[in-house]
Image (cartoon, rainbow, N blue to C red; front, side, top):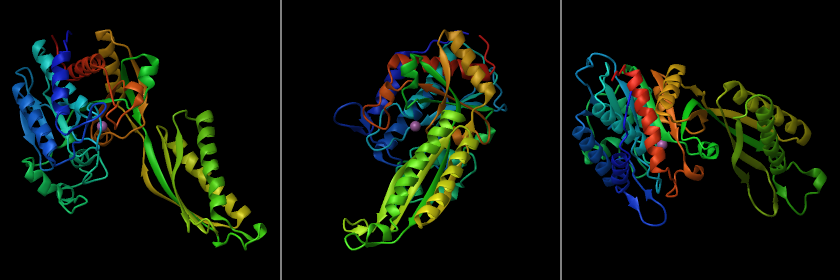
Length: 419
Ligand code: CO
């Protein structure tokens, strides 16, 4: 199967998209928030590029964009193979995070058309609304609706910081469509994304095949001691909540390190926020609220770290006389990628003479939602120095083309394309 990826055409698409909401300064930054003028321009450009390639474009009620290529060899009744990502960005984000996956999917379709391939399934190119969650939602909004986790009505009623609803914002830019994009109607979904880490660069390997997307647990912890005068309270009479918290923070680090050494090297545990009450120089700290973030591709090892954190709190209560609570308020299990799709990606790399390696994703992606309703896979392209969500985010154009070549081959395989 010979698929020729047109690197300059792909680059032209990503560069054109980068101009919408471009920020001045060093690097290549853009701010593209859902429902903004820049977002309208990015969406309109995508629709026109899809139409130029002969795709049939639909916009759903929450602004998800999908373009179907249904060649003569394919029956429109068969479930499509879908691929895509998102066009929105964080404020002053990079130009590849999201758009690479959308335009690589489109380039894959163009390459299949030019190679004269005859897939027996349609190919769907997708751009999800509000992946970054910078305006209306915590993130992954469009895909949450496409998998039925959130209703269209619920999504449209979401408001931004100024009280403007998603439905108003989409109507204002002409992207409130109809119906609901239903990802469960796809035979498979593959998302290409930048790695946002430096493992591929370090290994000198151009394309990553994602094995799993990590699960995430957030725990809210409170430690209650006794606030008192820092001068008049002798050391022996204190119940210092911050000293207790200090021990706990180090216990969480130890729990993560020991889990990495013994069970799962991808496990991480972080205490990233801490609020001290009353937070005054001359007062013995009376209370601390802190949060733990635990992630891994193995749910058992996430559980193990949380379990050790709970035992640490019990010990600290006994030894220091503080009172503690731990609330595991947010819990998302790891999402393994489909073994069949991983194999298709590996074989497609091999066929194209492009080395691939398996790695996990530490960041969340729309693929995480889609995996709940259909077979899902992900590919990574190298991120220079591992930087993303920044104008310094960079992926070499040749690496974009290589990853797209592997994506195109994977989609062609899954769609039953024969030369
Ligand atoms: Co992204």
